[in-house]
Image 1 (cartoon, helix red, strand yellow):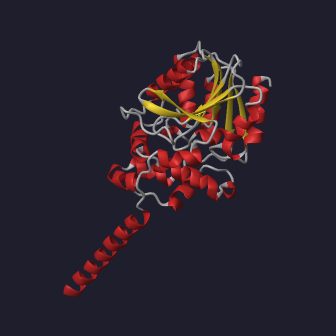
Image 2: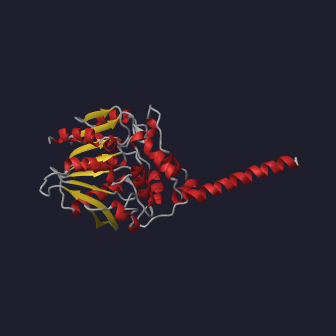
Image 3: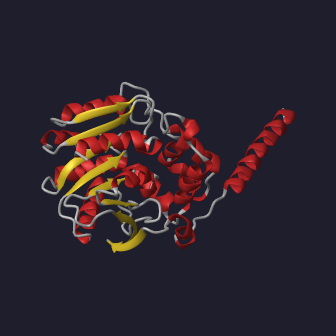
Length: 318
């Protein structure tokens, strides 16, 4: 019996030792935003004061555009996710993209409120500050949910809507298996919150980014560097835990009230928000158009900007 106890004790000690070693090796303290701006906020980036935050923003293209295009990224992404679209559009259209509160260089909001309602108010306030009354509004994932919720709340301001693998329907209602990136899974488990907020293996970030690509081989080291640095921005990991706590289910019954022209783009290999949800959006938003890219994943605009923005140009008559 003593031998068994000693063996169990050694096993437990080994587990504790290697657990602590793992925490030590992956310990990653927050980085102040000032340490990240030199690399990730080169011109035309700017910071504007809004709702108690310094919001990282890029506002490009002709200022006389009567309907600027506003683009909203998804969870743990940044305005950089739209770079391919911005490059293709800014010669003819004004393109506005920003790091949403809780993410990237903008960082957490003062009230720690990441509800969809608060994001809708943020988008409206940003448009007001930039002097934009009406606009085309596009968004991916969480950004897509914010986009359609904004169109519901402010129908007079949203001229056209572009949803890219948007969230909003309850994941539990999916018939297709859902593959949530491990980083998001950890953020859902309250006892793991201290680990999520203080450690960050780069390999975990790489795995999470690859999980949202249809072709994981397209994920490059510089792309992983971007996502890694944006996660380390002071306060973002704590904000992610809070954002995940608040969920991704919206008032999808309100979609039937939308009268705005709507383009729905979806990656056929999206394992986070499967195509069946894109088909639901197409059914629930009258007159909308669904375009599916069979080989792309959850971020088709980032994975293949040229092919996806071509559909946007057709939709906008460019």
